[in-house]
Amino acid sequence: MATKSEVISWVCSLADRGIGVDADGAYGMQCVDLPNMVAQKFFGRSMWGNGIDMLSAGQGLGWHTTGGNVLPRAGAIFCMRVSYHGYGHTGIVVGEPDGNGNFQTVEQNVDGGLAGGPARYRVRSLGNPTENIIGFIYPPYSDGIDAPAGGAGQGGGPGGGGPTGYQGETMDFTFMISGDAGWNAQTIWYYNGAINEIQPLHNLEELKYLRAIYNDTHGGRDLKHYEWNTQAPVYVRIFGALKPSTEDNNIKAALNKIIKQLENAT
Image (cartoon, rainbow, N blue to C red; front, side):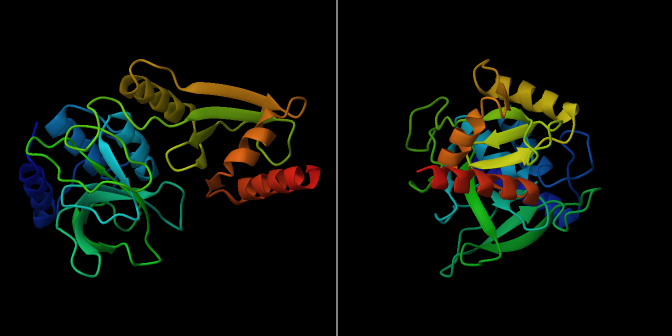
């Protein structure tokens, strides 16, 4: 285990030198490679998924998490949505917030390029309406995390005010839907319960790694998969109750149709 200052010092050294890390050897220095490398290098764990998945990945490791409405402490990993794609963004908080809710971060691939980009300093703010921060994740630093309590998505973990071990379990699953023109029958979709969002998987390789890391971080349990159709439209009832969000405009329309369908039936 590492102290908070050791991790922050190492992260800042990357930004100071204008370099970055590629934790998984794919697509260059992506944003998610930075927290993933911190998890691997200092805590012997891996964080699966894209930037948007970091909150769920942290909960899967039993690490303390807080919602995006709670000011972070230095050492936290942040998770945020972005408007121009569905992968989200992530980085490390390296400074305590000021009186206006601004805090310094180190992030990779700040410009969102397909080839990635090195670590850079940024300033983020909870008060900025253009920065949709979902939440914060706190690794189990050996000197404690002094993390704030409360906020959506809170889990347990060492120093986090909750019991040690896997906490904050969410309802995550993959699914396919056939016979409904609003859903591509060939696409496998992932429901991320940590942020109540539906995301498409782009290929079978993504699905393979998602399942493997889910199994590894959830005590050997498998990520459940469902196949639904219009003959028994279970998905209508499920998503009518959950009302999930999505970055896919076609699925937004399909979800709105489901909600209106249920409203008209009552």
